[in-house]
Length: 527
Image 1 (cartoon, rainbow, N blue to C red):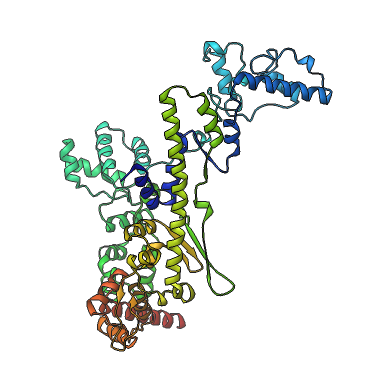
Image 2: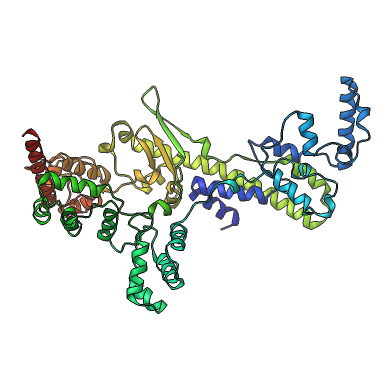
């Protein structure tokens, strides 16, 4: 395959974010490319062929404007260099006296002035004042001030704990052990490395390592440094002064909490139903992952590639999202202008390569947009029932069906649907969501069913259960057969586990316990 074809294939499978990054790199590399919505850059490139002619033309324009407006330009003196007067007053005091105000809200003024007094400016800058050097509040290179330098950096969990360790431990040996423990703490806040291994690696005693760990476990956030969930909850409860014997028994039997075995918990904790529910509510308010506040990455907003909306005639209007498409153009005028001045073979070869790459990139982006729109249109046509009525009407669909319908290869459809999103009245979906396996219909015949639609039916059945009528997997199979869906029991179990739904035995126990506790609480309140 040619490099151009490889590039086109790569562009097809890029997400919006990856495509924007790639186009930015091409704009930096190729001088013949420019943004369609950036006219300033185009004006900078459309310069006259001769810099001397440009200077003459600009001077003529200035003199003409001066003559037309009747302004007295003779007082400005001779125009030299960048047309700036040598005796222009640009110092801070002069500006303040002329403007009648104080110049204070400039980021780099004070620092630049001090640097100038200390001789920090290069020799070529003699005679320039601090204000004229820093210009618009930027650095010495004339760029704008870097506002990100004034924003507080994101503190990591390790840095947060290290700062507290410096205040809590004065002994250098304890600090060394503390740094090793902090380095072993995961982003979630747990210490998974055995404490014995850390002590052996440092040649310290187990008792000393445990003492340092207990100190770290008092740090913020509460629960950090715990070795399991029970210890994490216990640390937080101690900080709240709520770790009484009943709560200790509850934390020591978390598997019973997960199974909602309230009868067993009441017996172990020695409390009544109302106290048990209060204790469980307090457990839920604790943070099981204390370090996640420091380890979370910034959330990237998903930008849909295609939008679908209902048309007045009942059909669907499908269009590309212009916000997610890069807009670039080839500056043909600039290419023709600089090609005249290119004399060496190397320069001509470079310009030819840049022009070919620029043309190919713009064509590839157009082809990518057309292909995405074509694939999305065919998907909407096949899944019309889903957009009109919901998940129940999702039809089975595979890549080959779409590929045959639009005359493309299956691999192309796979690349187009990867990391591409569709926004509709039903919500935001990845294009691959609409490709689901086929489940055959029952003995009555008819169309096959989508696996996603069957999973949705199973969830609806379980959500509508009562404690007296909890559905087993076999019962769900029988109900689906009545709906003309032929499915095996193991498939139902697989779908149920994928939906994170427990078995019928556990669901019956949970629902019964909840009903009993609700009845007892209502009775106690009535008394």
